[in-house]
Image (cartoon, rainbow, N blue to C red; front, side):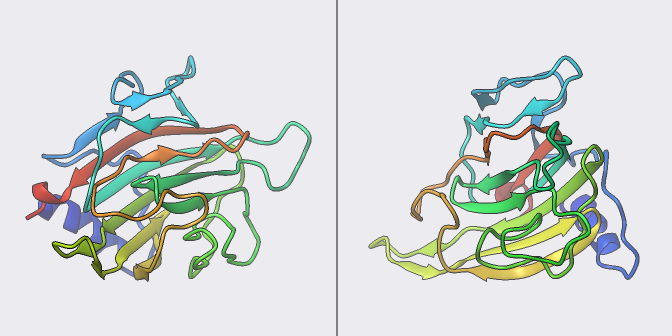
Length: 210
């Protein structure tokens, strides 16, 4: 199972973008949403087309993991350019921003950003209405027996097949994330009042990759 995932990431590391839309979960992965079953989520709302809406939080909590999800920013009916404000909160602490920032410069608040901490290396955002992918590798902070943090979290993000964050050290929670702690946390798809749909969401925990 690790070989399968690493094979995908090796392809993504090349000069040419390797899209991962429709990527199937490897053995050992936790399928969080397959278009039908939303039982692993709290506050889950599923569209008639089989897409998960914003505002859902996983019932399970996770530590180190590799996450794949696909999202679709819906056009704003008023024509607002910054439509689709949402975010993927890992452990409900660290946000990878989702926003309609197609065509703009990389920004700390733009799509693909580690929210308000680091802008993506390049802006790979597609226009609203198109499906996009995040492939995220997360290494949780390390803590000693006295619950003192000894190592910061680290995050790698591949957006639409292009690596935009490479093992970035993240010293604290981001945005409206929950305070850091040694305990694992859930995945949260932020509800910011905009329509964003999700599909093909799965997560490979660290114990399945050792």
